[in-house]
Image 1 (tube, rainbow, N blue to C red):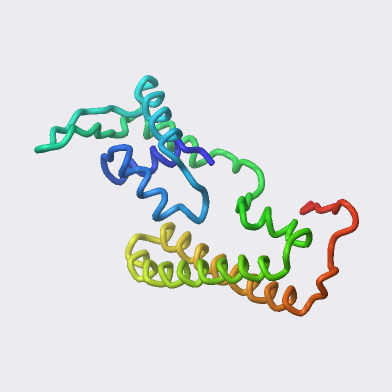
Image 2: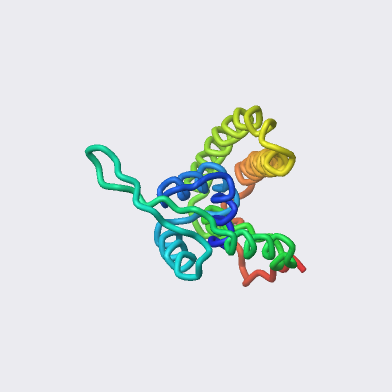
Length: 187
C-alpha cells in the first residue's frame, strides 16, 4: 500500500488536514488496510518538501489552527504516473484474527468458538454498514461503486466462511491438534 499515493488521491477531491485524511481512510478504505498518524504526517511532510503538496495554516475560533494540505500540479503528475504503473504484486490479506485462526488447534475449542462468534458478529455489523454505504456509493462514480461492491462481496464471503468454519469446529473432536508444521502456499 502506498500511503503517499492514497493521500494524493484524496487531495484530488478536496484540501484536507491530517486528521480528516486518516478518518476518511479508516472509514472508506479500512477493509483494504489500516493506517496511523505515524504514517500520514511524515508522508505529508516529505511530500511538502518534494513540492507535491502545499500546506497552509487555517485559524479556528477557540481551538488551535489546522494545517490544510492541497495537491500541487507536481503532485498530480506523480499521482498520474502511479495510476498507470504496473501493480505491485499480489493482493495481500492481513488480518490478525486469521493469523491466530491457523493456530487455534493448540487452544481451547470453547474459546475458539467464542472468538469465531465475535468475528461473525463483527462481520455482520460491517456488512450492514457496507449495505447502507452502497446507496451513497452508487452516486460516487463507477470506481468508488466498484470498490464498494468488492468490499461488500468480500464481507459476505468471509462471513459465509466464518459460519461454515464455526460449524465444522463445533462438530470436530477436541483432539484435532496439528502434529506437524504445515506447508501452505498460494502459488
